[in-house]
Image 1 (cartoon, one colour):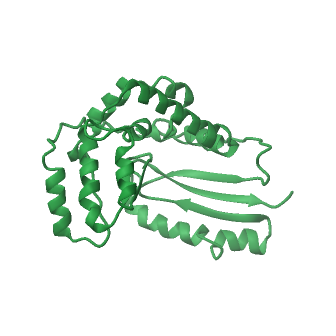
Image 2 (cartoon, helix red, strand yellow):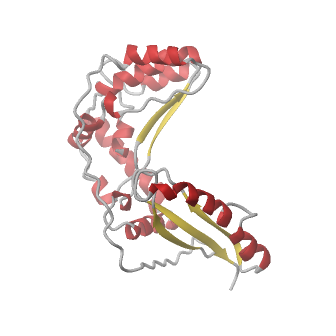
Image 3 (cartoon, rainbow, N blue to C red):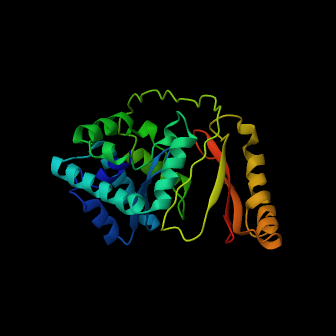
Length: 271
Protein backbone atom coordinates (compact mmCIF):
# COMPACT_ATOMS: atom_id res chain seq x y z
CA UNK A 1 0.00 0.00 0.00
CA UNK A 2 2.78 2.44 0.90
CA UNK A 3 4.77 1.53 -2.21
CA UNK A 4 1.77 2.22 -4.45
CA UNK A 5 1.14 5.52 -2.65
CA UNK A 6 4.53 6.68 -3.94
CA UNK A 7 3.85 5.35 -7.43
CA UNK A 8 0.51 7.18 -7.67
CA UNK A 9 2.48 10.37 -8.44
CA UNK A 10 4.14 8.84 -11.52
CA UNK A 11 1.54 9.99 -14.02
CA UNK A 12 -1.19 8.70 -16.28
CA UNK A 13 -1.78 8.60 -20.03
CA UNK A 14 -3.13 12.14 -19.68
CA UNK A 15 -0.58 13.64 -17.24
CA UNK A 16 3.14 12.87 -17.21
CA UNK A 17 5.18 12.02 -14.10
CA UNK A 18 4.97 14.87 -11.60
CA UNK A 19 2.74 16.96 -13.88
CA UNK A 20 -0.24 16.82 -11.52
CA UNK A 21 1.92 18.14 -8.69
CA UNK A 22 3.15 20.97 -10.90
CA UNK A 23 -0.42 21.90 -11.84
CA UNK A 24 -1.45 22.02 -8.18
CA UNK A 25 1.57 24.17 -7.33
CA UNK A 26 0.80 26.57 -10.20
CA UNK A 27 -2.71 27.17 -8.91
CA UNK A 28 -1.35 27.97 -5.45
CA UNK A 29 -2.17 24.66 -3.83
CA UNK A 30 -0.24 21.96 -2.05
CA UNK A 31 -0.64 18.22 -1.82
CA UNK A 32 0.66 15.12 -0.14
CA UNK A 33 -0.30 11.58 0.81
CA UNK A 34 0.20 9.09 3.63
CA UNK A 35 -0.45 5.45 4.39
CA UNK A 36 -1.62 4.38 7.83
CA UNK A 37 -2.35 0.94 9.22
CA UNK A 38 -5.89 1.05 7.80
CA UNK A 39 -5.96 3.29 4.71
CA UNK A 40 -4.06 5.45 2.24
CA UNK A 41 -5.02 9.12 1.94
CA UNK A 42 -4.29 11.61 -0.84
CA UNK A 43 -5.05 15.23 -0.07
CA UNK A 44 -4.78 18.69 -1.59
CA UNK A 45 -5.36 22.17 -0.19
CA UNK A 46 -6.55 24.61 -2.87
CA UNK A 47 -8.80 27.62 -3.30
CA UNK A 48 -12.49 26.60 -3.53
CA UNK A 49 -12.68 27.53 -7.22
CA UNK A 50 -9.87 25.01 -7.93
CA UNK A 51 -11.72 22.04 -6.47
CA UNK A 52 -12.80 20.98 -9.96
CA UNK A 53 -9.14 20.71 -11.03
CA UNK A 54 -7.92 18.52 -8.17
CA UNK A 55 -10.96 16.25 -8.27
CA UNK A 56 -10.31 15.71 -11.96
CA UNK A 57 -6.69 14.79 -11.21
CA UNK A 58 -7.71 12.31 -8.53
CA UNK A 59 -10.36 10.70 -10.72
CA UNK A 60 -7.82 10.34 -13.53
CA UNK A 61 -5.22 8.54 -11.47
CA UNK A 62 -7.81 6.35 -9.77
CA UNK A 63 -8.12 4.39 -13.02
CA UNK A 64 -5.44 5.54 -15.48
CA UNK A 65 -2.20 5.14 -13.55
CA UNK A 66 0.76 4.46 -15.84
CA UNK A 67 3.72 2.61 -14.34
CA UNK A 68 6.98 2.32 -16.25
CA UNK A 69 9.45 -0.23 -14.90
CA UNK A 70 12.10 2.48 -14.56
CA UNK A 71 9.87 4.56 -12.27
CA UNK A 72 8.88 1.50 -10.24
CA UNK A 73 12.48 0.50 -9.56
CA UNK A 74 13.60 4.03 -8.73
CA UNK A 75 10.68 4.52 -6.32
CA UNK A 76 11.48 1.21 -4.67
CA UNK A 77 14.92 2.64 -3.95
CA UNK A 78 13.22 5.74 -2.52
CA UNK A 79 11.14 3.80 0.01
CA UNK A 80 14.15 1.69 0.97
CA UNK A 81 16.07 4.90 1.68
CA UNK A 82 13.04 6.20 3.60
CA UNK A 83 13.17 3.11 5.77
CA UNK A 84 16.92 3.49 6.35
CA UNK A 85 16.50 7.16 7.31
CA UNK A 86 13.41 6.92 9.50
CA UNK A 87 13.77 3.44 11.00
CA UNK A 88 17.10 1.69 10.52
CA UNK A 89 19.10 4.72 11.72
CA UNK A 90 16.81 5.28 14.70
CA UNK A 91 17.01 2.75 17.54
CA UNK A 92 13.75 3.98 19.09
CA UNK A 93 11.94 3.38 15.77
CA UNK A 94 13.46 -0.08 15.43
CA UNK A 95 12.35 -0.90 18.96
CA UNK A 96 8.77 0.25 18.23
CA UNK A 97 8.69 -2.22 15.32
CA UNK A 98 9.79 -5.01 17.64
CA UNK A 99 7.14 -4.06 20.19
CA UNK A 100 4.36 -4.08 17.58
CA UNK A 101 5.54 -7.43 16.23
CA UNK A 102 5.32 -8.86 19.75
CA UNK A 103 2.05 -7.12 20.66
CA UNK A 104 -0.03 -8.65 17.87
CA UNK A 105 0.22 -12.39 17.36
CA UNK A 106 -1.84 -12.54 14.15
CA UNK A 107 -3.34 -9.17 13.22
CA UNK A 108 -1.50 -7.34 10.37
CA UNK A 109 -0.70 -4.40 12.67
CA UNK A 110 2.33 -6.48 13.61
CA UNK A 111 3.83 -5.62 10.18
CA UNK A 112 5.39 -2.15 9.73
CA UNK A 113 3.44 0.05 7.32
CA UNK A 114 6.60 0.71 5.32
CA UNK A 115 7.43 -3.01 5.34
CA UNK A 116 10.37 -5.18 6.34
CA UNK A 117 13.43 -4.44 4.23
CA UNK A 118 13.84 -7.97 2.82
CA UNK A 119 10.22 -7.90 1.60
CA UNK A 120 10.47 -4.34 0.24
CA UNK A 121 13.40 -5.38 -1.96
CA UNK A 122 11.16 -7.93 -3.68
CA UNK A 123 8.37 -5.50 -4.60
CA UNK A 124 7.76 -5.49 -8.34
CA UNK A 125 5.79 -3.62 -10.97
CA UNK A 126 3.35 -6.53 -11.05
CA UNK A 127 2.82 -6.30 -7.27
CA UNK A 128 1.96 -2.62 -7.59
CA UNK A 129 -0.41 -3.08 -10.53
CA UNK A 130 -2.18 -6.03 -8.88
CA UNK A 131 -2.73 -4.00 -5.70
CA UNK A 132 -3.93 -1.00 -7.73
CA UNK A 133 -6.45 -3.04 -9.72
CA UNK A 134 -7.68 -4.85 -6.64
CA UNK A 135 -8.40 -1.92 -4.35
CA UNK A 136 -8.49 1.37 -6.29
CA UNK A 137 -12.10 1.90 -7.33
CA UNK A 138 -14.70 4.60 -6.54
CA UNK A 139 -16.76 2.18 -4.47
CA UNK A 140 -13.73 1.59 -2.24
CA UNK A 141 -12.92 5.27 -1.69
CA UNK A 142 -14.17 7.96 0.67
CA UNK A 143 -14.24 11.59 -0.51
CA UNK A 144 -13.79 14.24 2.18
CA UNK A 145 -14.12 17.94 1.37
CA UNK A 146 -13.88 20.70 3.96
CA UNK A 147 -13.88 24.45 3.39
CA UNK A 148 -15.82 27.27 1.81
CA UNK A 149 -17.89 25.08 -0.51
CA UNK A 150 -21.48 23.92 -0.58
CA UNK A 151 -22.73 20.36 -0.50
CA UNK A 152 -24.45 20.95 -3.84
CA UNK A 153 -21.20 22.06 -5.52
CA UNK A 154 -19.24 19.12 -4.16
CA UNK A 155 -21.95 16.64 -5.15
CA UNK A 156 -22.05 18.01 -8.69
CA UNK A 157 -18.26 17.75 -9.04
CA UNK A 158 -18.27 14.24 -7.61
CA UNK A 159 -20.90 13.22 -10.14
CA UNK A 160 -18.88 14.84 -12.91
CA UNK A 161 -15.54 13.22 -12.10
CA UNK A 162 -16.25 9.98 -10.23
CA UNK A 163 -19.64 8.81 -11.49
CA UNK A 164 -18.28 7.90 -14.97
CA UNK A 165 -15.77 5.50 -13.39
CA UNK A 166 -17.32 2.03 -13.25
CA UNK A 167 -17.48 0.36 -9.87
CA UNK A 168 -15.57 -2.88 -9.48
CA UNK A 169 -16.05 -5.92 -7.34
CA UNK A 170 -13.87 -5.44 -4.27
CA UNK A 171 -12.34 -8.55 -2.77
CA UNK A 172 -13.90 -9.54 0.53
CA UNK A 173 -11.65 -8.77 3.47
CA UNK A 174 -11.31 -11.80 5.69
CA UNK A 175 -10.06 -9.94 8.72
CA UNK A 176 -8.17 -12.12 11.16
CA UNK A 177 -8.64 -11.95 14.90
CA UNK A 178 -6.11 -12.17 17.68
CA UNK A 179 -5.81 -15.61 19.29
CA UNK A 180 -5.87 -15.77 23.09
CA UNK A 181 -2.76 -14.18 24.54
CA UNK A 182 -1.60 -16.52 27.26
CA UNK A 183 1.77 -15.08 28.20
CA UNK A 184 3.06 -11.55 28.74
CA UNK A 185 5.95 -10.38 26.61
CA UNK A 186 8.79 -8.24 27.87
CA UNK A 187 11.19 -6.51 25.50
CA UNK A 188 14.26 -4.51 26.38
CA UNK A 189 16.84 -2.72 24.25
CA UNK A 190 20.01 -0.84 25.05
CA UNK A 191 21.00 2.04 22.78
CA UNK A 192 23.66 4.71 22.90
CA UNK A 193 21.19 6.98 21.07
CA UNK A 194 18.82 7.09 24.03
CA UNK A 195 19.87 9.64 26.62
CA UNK A 196 16.94 9.10 28.95
CA UNK A 197 15.60 5.71 29.99
CA UNK A 198 12.07 4.97 28.78
CA UNK A 199 9.44 2.54 30.00
CA UNK A 200 6.09 1.59 28.50
CA UNK A 201 3.41 -0.99 29.11
CA UNK A 202 0.55 -1.62 26.72
CA UNK A 203 -2.58 -3.78 26.62
CA UNK A 204 -4.84 -4.91 23.79
CA UNK A 205 -8.02 -2.83 23.79
CA UNK A 206 -11.23 -2.54 21.75
CA UNK A 207 -11.78 0.06 19.04
CA UNK A 208 -14.76 1.39 17.12
CA UNK A 209 -14.18 -1.37 14.55
CA UNK A 210 -13.07 -4.26 16.72
CA UNK A 211 -14.06 -5.94 19.95
CA UNK A 212 -16.26 -4.46 22.67
CA UNK A 213 -16.68 -1.05 21.03
CA UNK A 214 -19.13 0.03 23.74
CA UNK A 215 -16.08 0.71 25.94
CA UNK A 216 -14.28 3.04 23.50
CA UNK A 217 -15.65 6.33 24.81
CA UNK A 218 -15.04 5.32 28.41
CA UNK A 219 -11.44 4.41 27.58
CA UNK A 220 -10.94 7.78 25.88
CA UNK A 221 -12.10 9.52 29.06
CA UNK A 222 -9.98 7.20 31.21
CA UNK A 223 -6.74 7.94 29.34
CA UNK A 224 -7.31 11.68 29.79
CA UNK A 225 -7.85 11.25 33.54
CA UNK A 226 -4.88 8.94 34.02
CA UNK A 227 -2.31 10.37 31.66
CA UNK A 228 -3.60 13.17 29.49
CA UNK A 229 -1.18 15.94 30.40
CA UNK A 230 0.48 17.65 33.33
CA UNK A 231 -2.74 17.69 35.39
CA UNK A 232 -3.31 13.93 34.99
CA UNK A 233 -3.06 11.55 37.93
CA UNK A 234 0.00 9.72 36.64
CA UNK A 235 1.94 12.93 36.02
CA UNK A 236 1.00 14.52 39.33
CA UNK A 237 1.77 11.36 41.33
CA UNK A 238 5.01 10.27 39.65
CA UNK A 239 6.54 13.53 38.43
CA UNK A 240 5.31 16.28 40.75
CA UNK A 241 4.84 14.47 44.06
CA UNK A 242 7.06 11.36 44.15
CA UNK A 243 9.62 12.77 41.71
CA UNK A 244 10.46 9.28 40.42
CA UNK A 245 9.89 10.27 36.78
CA UNK A 246 10.58 13.24 34.53
CA UNK A 247 7.50 12.43 32.43
CA UNK A 248 4.58 10.03 32.64
CA UNK A 249 1.29 9.50 30.88
CA UNK A 250 -0.96 7.17 28.94
CA UNK A 251 -2.38 6.84 25.46
CA UNK A 252 -5.35 5.28 23.71
CA UNK A 253 -7.14 5.75 20.40
CA UNK A 254 -10.32 4.03 19.30
CA UNK A 255 -10.27 4.83 15.58
CA UNK A 256 -8.65 1.60 14.37
CA UNK A 257 -10.48 -0.88 12.17
CA UNK A 258 -8.64 -3.61 14.06
CA UNK A 259 -7.72 -3.94 17.74
CA UNK A 260 -6.32 -0.95 19.56
CA UNK A 261 -3.90 -0.62 22.46
CA UNK A 262 -4.11 1.16 25.79
CA UNK A 263 -0.68 2.10 27.05
CA UNK A 264 1.25 3.78 29.84
CA UNK A 265 4.70 5.36 29.62
CA UNK A 266 7.24 7.01 31.85
CA UNK A 267 10.78 8.35 31.83
CA UNK A 268 12.31 7.54 35.23
CA UNK A 269 14.59 9.98 36.95
CA UNK A 270 18.28 9.15 37.20
CA UNK A 271 18.75 6.01 39.29
